[in-house]
Image (cartoon, rainbow, N blue to C red; front, top):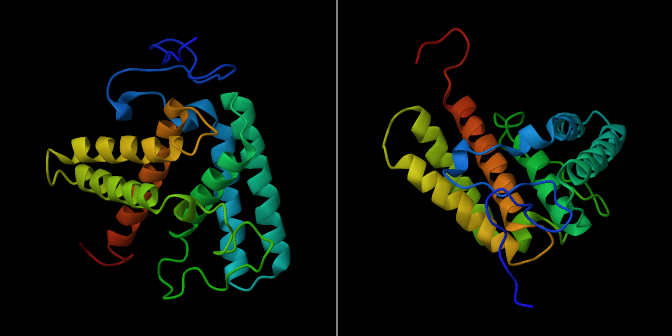
Length: 210
């Protein structure tokens, strides 16, 4: 029987709790809408990772790993899609991306690097930017377009952002594991995190004017 892509209103994959939606990517339900508790775990893991990088002890790194597991388990439960390797790559990327805003003022934002076998070590084979460097670049580019959109720089920034998100999802979907609609949600989430990171970086320091 030939493969049939699911239609809008149908599950994104067998057993998936993600429903295929049509229309603009930025107008669809977000990953946070599907799994709000998982986002909380991502944020808390990012804070724990930053605490480790501020030399507050390996206990903070251990805490970050525990919170990463909670985020992955919550994403799996709320989306109905369970590929462990895919979620590990996606969730670590989310945590690292969120953590960059805490260390943005430091010239060595990612030091010290956790040693193996931590999933946060740069050499880990399941890093999303290692699995698909092009998808990583597409997500960062979409984040730049979203940040520009909020400033009204160019009316085409929405188009560029949505195209970048879709292309990142397409590249990651080629690796299998999760459905294409879910990869779109993941790529959008990461692009929106990056857009907020850029906004924070460009904001005037307290007590100054823009």
